[in-house]
Structure formats: structure tokens, C-alpha cells
Length: 152
Length: 83
Image (cartoon, helix red, strand yellow):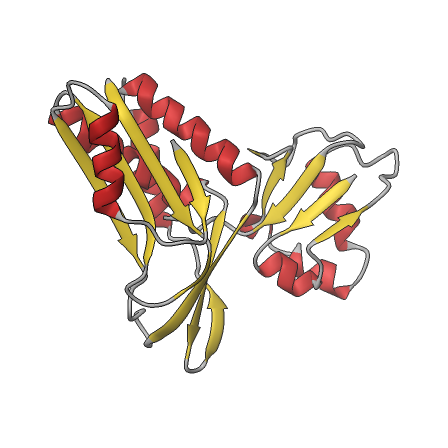
């Protein structure tokens, strides 16, 4: 399932829902992304996430389906927030559940690597000296390319 | 054709969305970028560095040689920074 929302989420609650709705889950992997308090140059006062409504949901569903094709997953969840967030706020949650840990670990990392560079979100940081759009990192591109190179 | 702008494109163009009528010779993304950039100084600046332009046609990321039609939804934005 995917959700794109302004509201915060409760990780424990989301894991419980997945646990209760499925049988034979042997392991659940979750990743939570937070707003950092500092960038290399200054303290971050706030972060605003903009996205492309429609395309975001479409692309997240597509990549979630791809994860289910590549790994034997019982369930998965992607929540990505948008709007104005403060340092330490939760931004993104990826949960993957499987009978075995390997599929859960790998698919969770695959989804996060993909989200960093392919989901239509843009971050604007506000610091004491003003606001600026966060530049994309080429290292993130490399991480996602590794998955395309790997065999299923 | 409906064109959407996000992030720094929206800010620099001071525009989140517009509808344009394409000239017949503008039939792919590259030609659209060239046509749009000639309109005014803001457009020229925002479309100057092609490496920093990402484009979606009907909500799918595409390359510059992708053909476009009058009823497509086009979006311009910088490299994405989700997660």
C-alpha cells in the first residue's frame, strides 16, 4: 500500500496493522527517514517537501509492484509526507514483510534507494540565512543504478 | 498542451501551470524546451542547463527526444530529492 500525506504516521501502529492482516510473516523490515537538524553548513529550521500529485502516487505504486515481483513479500507499505516539516520530524516510512529476512531487508533498501532519486519530491531547506532547494546527490543515482544492474 | 512546473522551476517562472498551443514544428521535448526558453528572460534562465532539467510526459519521466502531442500533460522540474 502507498500513502502520500501531510500528516505524521505511527510506525508501531503501521507494523501492527501489517502483522494482523497477514499470515506467515517471518520478518518485518522498516526504514524511517527523518528531517536532519544540520546540513554541512548550517542549522536547519524547517524543510518543505513539494511533490507532483498524481505522478507521485502512480510512480510509488509502480515501484512497490516491482518490489513484489523481485522479492517474495507478504506485504509492504510506503508512506511519504509532504508540506512543512521541522527537524526530527518523520518524512518517509518503508515497511516490507516477508517469510524470511533477506527479502524484507533487500526490498526495503531497494525501495528507499529508488525513492531518493525517482519519486517526484523536492526538498527546500530553511536556514537562518534563507531558503534553498536541496541539490540531488550523484551518489544517490549510483545506489539506485546498482539495483538495475543486479539480476532478479 | 498543459505544462506544470515544480520546485525551482515553479519559483523562477513564477508559475505553477500554464496551457500553451504548440506550433506544428514543436513535436518533441527538446524542441519544446527550446521554444519555451525563447519566450522571456525567466524562461531562458530556467531552461539554460539541460543537465538540471527533468521532464515528465503524462506523469512518466522521459528523455528529450520523446515525441509530444497537444493533449499531453508535460511537467518540468529539477532532479528529484525524495526519501
